[in-house]
Image (cartoon, rainbow, N blue to C red; front, side, top):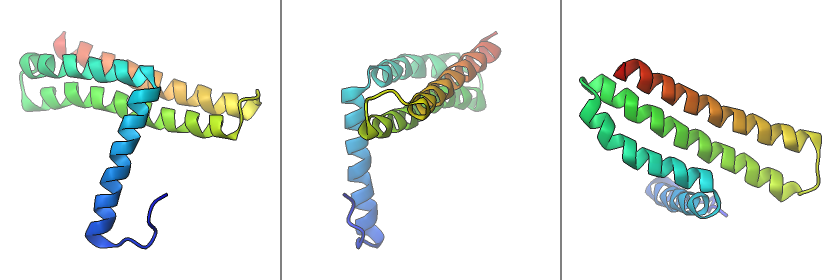
Length: 119
């Protein structure tokens, strides 16, 4: 658990360590995140090569970053729901479905961004 008494620079250092732990946990436990990171690693050089302007390159890369951000949040929601219990509950299912819908929307947004810029 975070040190609630840490202030200033020490708090920032602690936050960095907690963030790295979050990336490691997501990489270890979430196959979808691993797939999206691989997609990001492949698409970033393509975006740099295919984007004609700096804005286009940023939009292409940023749309993929958005997918990973939403996946991190979805994974956090799923972890909390699973922590509460594995038995079926309507609200638990709804929370997971909503998180999944958010990931799908970010993927659609990325696909539309890439299609409109490249076509």
